[in-house]
Structures are given as structure tokens and as C-alpha cells.
Image (cartoon, rainbow, N blue to C red; front, side, top):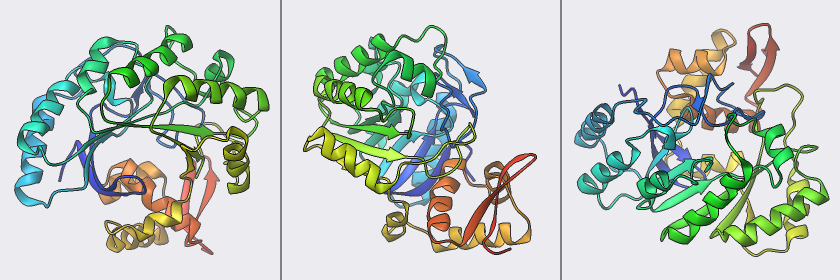
Length: 312
């Protein structure tokens, strides 16, 4: 059992991905309205060794002593990974013991204005920063940033990192209808894409309930209209949960365990994580597929959003 590693998780973009969680739930620079992990409990720009680097290194060593290598080692998890001040040290450790396994970083990119952060992850193979707004007011409406986080600095940090980074940058834009899909905002998005110059732009949207109620994901047709509006060859749609099941690393035993658990009683995401001993990010990947397959459904109860077997 590992406390800070999770998976390997079946990822649409990264195949069999071993997750590394560097901050407790939910330490982040943002408190996004759509976050499926939950509401931010510590909204901060302060970088600290939230989880000790030696603990991470010990788990990585133990994992590789007894498990096959994944397609990627991915820094993501319960909050913003670049808030951990020792992320660079852990990178160096991985490059030393497993130089043949590529490293990916899933980040909101908001700390890239800090040269120390950029230097810490510049040796990654793939960095996947997010960009949910093209203007200050939409940024504050969707992402609800820490008090001193300035949108202009965020964008300049993304541009600076792209100029310094030799690996692949896949920019994820998360579309929320009625929040960031106006023609004005889409025009501004295109300007930013051309300034940042990522290798690809990946359009995503909401799969399940976020932090705030009454949000909805964009339909495939809506996302395609955005692709057509931008007329940029590097844009692709990745919001297709059922495709994850085709990935070799998709585990039917994990799917079965989730279904059997919620067949007994409805469970929240946190309930499932605690009962099954799996990281919430890992559970999330399977819930996407199970909902798309209509094997489970969500219900809103007093304690939050619960998942139950379909037709229960």
C-alpha cells in the first residue's frame, strides 16, 4: 500500500500512468468551480515541503522493486504539485533511478512566473498546464485564485516556460458553457494560444459534478464548434471518457470493486477512496467510464454527491 503514489491509472493521454501526489488534499493556488477533487482547503501561493521528499523517494524505490515500469510517471494528485518546494529534487531522483521512464506534470501553471518553479520542472518530458480563462474577470469567476495571484503574471509565466522548455507542452483548455465560451473570450483564447505556442491544445470539459452546483459539461458538438472557430491545427478534443476503457492499463478488477462497493450502499468519491484504498484521482478515472456505460448514476444527498448502481 502506498500513501503518495497511485495507480498505474488508465490515462487517455499518458497510457499507464503512475501518479505521484506531492501535496495533501486539497492544497492549491486555485479553487476552481469545476474541480472534481473538491473544494480547496488551503488556498495559497506559498511553496513548502508539504509532503517530505524522502517519503516520496522511499515509496518510489519500493514500487520499482516489485512492479513493472509504467508508461509515464505523472505528478498530479490532490492539489497543485508545483507548490511542493522539493519537486525538483524528486525529479532528479527519478531521472537517476529510472532515466528511461518519461515524466509528465499535470499543473495549473499558475506558478510558472516563478523562475524556481520553471527550473524545477524544466527536465520533464511532458508538461500539461491548464488555461480556463483568457481574461482577468473570467479567471476570477472560474478559477477563484489565491489573493495575490495576478492573471497577467500567470500568462507571462506560461510564455516564459514554453520558451525555456525543450519537452512537449500540451495546453489543456477546460470549457464551461456560459462561463468561458463567449465569442469574445474565445477570440482572446486564440490570441493567448498563439503567444504561448504549445505543441497541442486539448479541449476538455466537465464529466461529473464540480465544486459548485448547476454546472454542465460542453457537448461534443459545442467543443467541435470551438475547434472550427479557432481554425488551429494543434487543437484536439479529449473529452471522451469511454475511450479510456480501450487502454491496456484499464483494470476490470478495479471497475468490479467499485460496482460491488456501491451496490451495497451509495458512496461519495471520498468514501470509495477510503474503502478501496485507492487515490481519488484513480477512482475518478473509473467513475467516468462507469457513468458513460450507464452502470452507475449519481445522486445528490445531504452529505454531497453520491454514486450508486444504476437502477438501484
